[in-house]
Image (tube, rainbow, N blue to C red; front, side, top):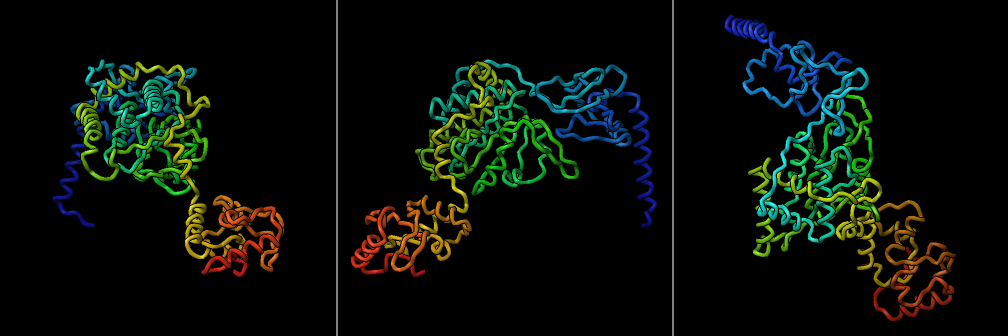
Length: 470
C-alpha cells in the first residue's frame, strides 16, 4: 500500500514524539517502581494496576514509561514495591494469598503477594446507621438463629480472609427488588471489588473449563443461578469446599491453585439448585416480599427497608462499608467454624429445596406417572413395570431395578416373587396404590389377586384393571 506524503509525515511526527518522550521519561522511575515488578523467572514485568496477572516485555514497558509522563495522578497505594532509586523490585515468585504480606521472603528470594485488602477505616456507627443494617438483615433472615449465622458468616469473611468458610450463601425467591443483589454488593465491598469476580452466565461458568479468574479472587458471585437437575450442583461442590482447585485459562496450561474465594449465589427461581439431603455446603434463604409477584401496598414496608439500605450502600460506598465493618468487628466468632466439619446451618428453606430436588429423569417420570393416573391408569390395580415404561414413560430407564425403584417412589409395591395374573406369569408385577387400597397385598395368592381384580372390574364402567394386555 502506498502512503500519501501527509500520512508518512504524521507517522514520523508520532515516532519523533515517542522517542522525545522516551528520552525525557527514562531518567525517572518513580511511576514505574510504583506500578511494576520484574518477575525473574521470565524477565517480564508484572503490571500491578491490573486486577489479573498481566505481564509486559521490555519493549512494552519502555512504551509505558513514555506513557507515564502523561499520568497526572500516579497512585501512591503501591509504593511498598519501591526500593529507593534502584529501579524495579525483582521477585522470584508470585502468588495470591490473604495470609501473607504484600512482599515476603523465603530464604534469600523475594516473593510478591497479589492480594490487596480493602483499605477500610473503622468507623463507629450512628444508631440510625446500625438500625439500617440490622433491619436489612432481618428481611433476609427473619429467624433469629438464621440471622445470627448470616451475621457471623459476614463477620468472618470480612475479618479472616485467610480462612475460607467453605459455606456458600444462596439467596433466592420470585420477588424482584428483594435485596438479593444488594447483598452481593455488600459482600463485595467488604472483601474489595478488586477481589470479586462475577461471571456473565453462572451456570455456563460452573460447567465450563476456564476458571483462571478465580486464582486472584476472594469472592465469586453467581448471579441468576438456575439449572435443572444435579449437574450444576455437583459441579459447584468443589468450588465451595475444596482447598485447591484446577484452574485453566484460554491458551494456558491447567494448574492446581489454592482456593481462597467465598461464594454468594442468588436467583429469582424457586428451585435454583438441586440439593441432596444433609448437604451443608449451602446456607439457603428464600427472600420473598409479602406479595412475591404483585406490586401492592403489602410490600411497601419491605421495599422501604431494602431501598433505605441500598441507597446508603450506593451513595456512601466507603462510609457505609466502614460502618458495617465496625459492627462486624463486634460479632463473636468463637464458635463459628463451619470449615471444621460443621458446615452451614440447616434452614427450613434448605430443607424445602432438598424436598423438591429431583433429577431430570425422576421429574420426567413423575409427570408421566401423574398423566397415566389421570387417564389409562386410573383403574389399574396391577401393572407390569417393564411394559409400563415401554408404553407410558418418555424417560428411558434401562435398568429394571431403577424402573422398580421409580415406581416404588410413587407408592407401588413389588411382589418380590413370580405371580400369575389373568393368565400371565411374571416377577415384574407391581401393586398400584389403588390396588393396595382394594386389598391386594404382597402376600396374596394368585387366586385372590385375580378375584379382587375381577370383582373390581365388575364394579366400574370404563376400563379393565390390569395392563397385562400391553
